[in-house]
Figure 1: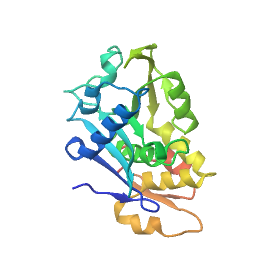
Figure 2: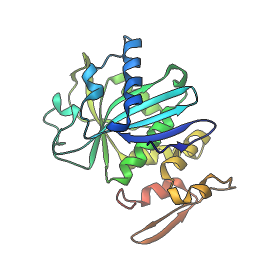
Figure 3: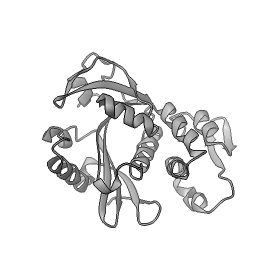
Length: 242
């Protein structure tokens, strides 16, 4: 059974393993068939089943967006290595690959679905010691992600992937957290995403109460950290401190 986390209104978010992602994979296949300009190979959606994770954002009308993440491993490998085998990613468990991201047409353009998906992926990776997210990106997509606060950096040569030219790109989890946290100072949408990413289940009720100022707190090996500044909070927590 999928454990959904409630967001604003009727929206919910979850991150699941392949065996629980039947609806998510169906959504990805529908998007692929309905939009000729977006055509990953059919096998890309089903590939890497043991190490794939799916972030799913939905509301009453259905799925709004899905991210397929492939976690670093020592058996199945990563999709990016099929085209850039020289990258230092084999047998590593501190990396993950953004394999597929798709949004329903009603959830595009304003970050309404991208932000909760990005926050959920960040939360999952941070809790499992993943420090880098990799992706194969076309130049326009690389620029688009930067506008929404994902600071991917080019990490290799431009090569053909899925029939188009892509760069292998890398984003540190720390840089992504800092980028979102800085934007949260001026945007309620990013502030909501940061709260979602940093939530702790047993403190959920406290986090959802209206507050004049958000206090970020977390117990670490060096004690309790408490601050009003999410940038300071993200910078002070190591990926394995859960």
